[in-house]
Length: 171
Image (cartoon, rainbow, N blue to C red; front, top):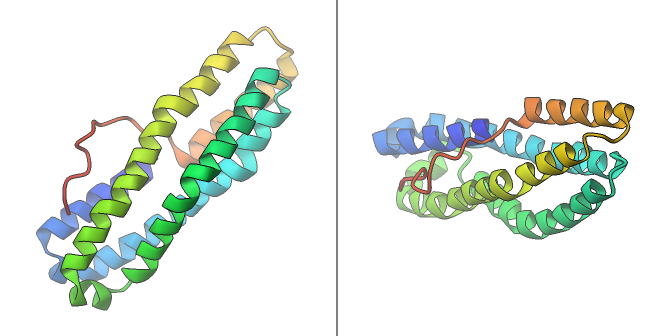
């Protein structure tokens, strides 16, 4: 999350400094952020949710199923919107041609990405940590395996520090 938030902030700074002047770097940053977002989604789908299912903890497994269903329902449209945004604005020429369109679409799409990350950090990750703490007396091998995967997950996609609702200023 921190990498994604930093990328959004850098895009904002570059845009404020001038889209035409910074078009090449803005396009490059959009492409790079696409990779980070894809990695984040893949880690959740291929590592985190399966780990919750294999945790040996019925509450965590149930939570994993619920969150995966909710996440796929919520994140699908957001990921599609970002993908379309990234494909449209991944060249300096497209940015220079329609600076106003870029600014408008960036404000909508990047805000959705930001708000989704905030919800995950506020509603999702703390629930997993709470459940893991509640069931700390369960079998040690399962706890160690889960903790290792959990640490690996955070190493890959980081943990977003909530920076307030006004983080995303207009591009």
